[in-house]
Image (cartoon, rainbow, N blue to C red; front, side):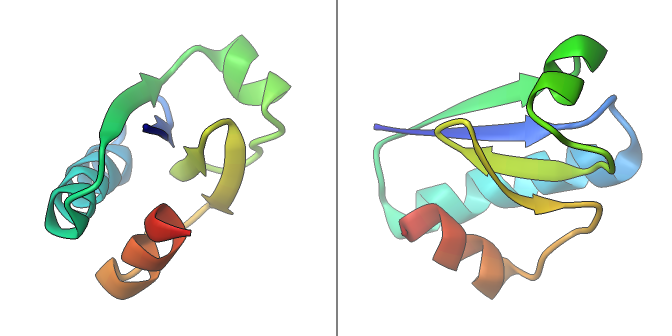
Length: 78
């Protein structure tokens, strides 16, 4: 099971990334678990300086921007 972690404090881009990531995972038909990380200490611990960010199984893949759906599917399926 992949753990998809959307990192951010709840801004509109963070919410959009969460929706996009969930839609991408459903389209890929993978076994996944969504997690929203909005605790500033955990965000800092993960090394994220700019949000929104997305991590797969605790590994930050994108930070500071909204990816396109194709790029998002690629990082989720890796």
